[in-house]
Length: 280
Image (tube, rainbow, N blue to C red):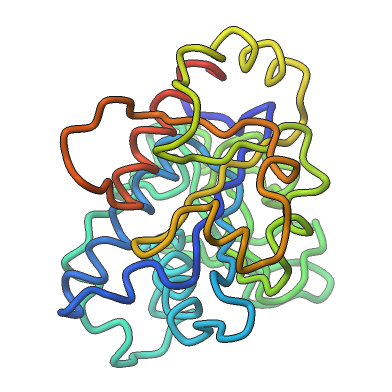
């Protein structure tokens, strides 16, 4: 069985200051990679990076996070074609692969599987590189440079395949990452269910049933996380917005913690584990 996209879209919000306080580049990239694994395992649709301090956004740090996330969401055989060698990718080799359905570990044409492909030419036919020994040709018209999903099906005489746009493919093919400049209330206004995580929030068990019902009828939900320095309440004050009106639920997903602070990557892992039980 291949993991399909969620029926209910889940987006995660983190501040652009995430990992900025890490003292070594390897520590920094490992923390980013740990979030990537959690998001992929939970079939998150989009990671949204917002600026904690509107007056002094950490754009460089945000773009670095986006670069690493986009790199990890790219099939390994496509990376050299898309990403030039740069010092910013120096330590990516320490990160574990996402191992999502569209990142096959090997070229096995005898087993049905999915692959990510890159459209290298588009004229009368689209020509696609998908990490196979030969280019694939399809009558479907895709824009040059587009990333597509290829379904490879076993056949006795020749390789059979179908090509889908990422939007139309039902298979889960990773998450997107976006850096935004809006305030939190502007970012989350169109979601059906808006969840904030906080040590000061209500115990998630007390709203479990209600969350289940809300999510069952939702098309899009979002979960927002604070930073190492500030919780979401403090960030909302910086954004000059009403914290409690901005979010539908303010929950504590790890009550009775025995450590002084829970790191953002840990909070994401705990929260998405709970949400996965509610939404699966």
